Image (cartoon, rainbow, N blue to C red; front, side, top):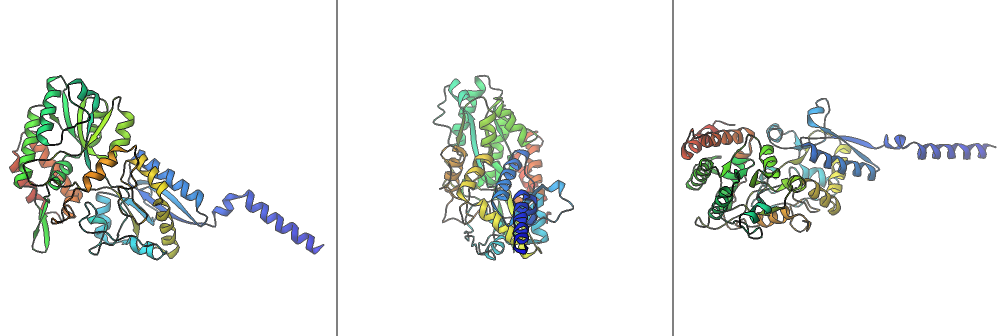
Length: 414
């Protein structure tokens, strides 16, 4: 009888475990992850987290928007802009290479010449954060509009001079907004400079200072100002507005983030072409652009189980099939299993990433590293640059005065 009762109890416990998934779930270790992503990309991250939670029997991620998680202590944080600035300045983060190595996973070190990764690695190239949202500026254009004015969509403009000629044809044909730019200062200063192998900072003793008032930058901003006056270029109050105008067919060409492809491709009622950011063919060698975007950080002073859960999620996110879904859903550049931005994993149906990857690889490996300074990435400095450029578009300041002022103002930012 005693053996019979024992068998009944064991069977009842087994039945309870099968019929009560919540009981099993309570045994998993849960950590909070916060993010600052827009709704569309937040949805893709939520899908990834849901798949992780379904597959992992030991750990669970509780995903929340940063704005709704003030009372929580997140272990993982997807940050960009001011949020990332604040975390770096506070130094309240656990380097990602330590989080991963403690769980038996080694992230690859990366060279300081790799464009756009300077803020996520230390001086020895070790990963402080995982650059899960890297993107770079490219040129999107309305293929139908090009055909209508006699331009070949398969041969888009490569130089700023040839782009000006194309915009003239579009304007003469009745297009009220031939060209627009999302994130103007990032495109026109940081990346136009990098495209010509020039940086936007310079050494000043032991620190760096902004260097956006050189001949190249003045030349380009002055050219863009002339396009504004000629009605070739329209600069809108927000990046989203510029992209919406392009998607509606109101603007024929836009320089913007390579990560905008999923939205533009799906919402535009016309063929969207993608090409590299133009360059000046009379200003030295052509270089690559810079990668930028949100990164995944780990908070400091968390438990060993918290970091094990974080490492488990990172391993899951870096799997090729998950990176493929991530790049298609977000437009961000994929990472390999060691956490490096890779061109090898770009899907054939993602022309934005093919162009972006090719463009990034054009960086001159023999030249001095550019674009790796924290200064132009600071939200306050970015705001200064945008304000001074806005004064140029409004014809309140000439290009040189605006850029000189930006350098002086940025020197006060700490």
